[in-house]
Image (spheres, rainbow, N blue to C red):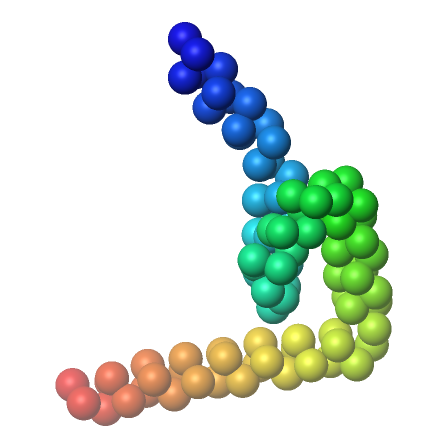
Length: 88
């Protein structure tokens, strides 16, 4: 029973740092840095990361870069499919 309580407490304590680290990692930032910040300043680090990501999303240049990356990835996938068809 004490182990269950310990695991539940650990899950509660690590939820925000894991969420912060995962959000940072999926947007190209360092997981361990944001995980550490989430451990030290849980709510503040999550709010700060949210603001940073929102600013990045609202920047027209970043949106154009994201669109260009998506177009290039689609083109590379299409070229790879064409190479596979040519080999058959």
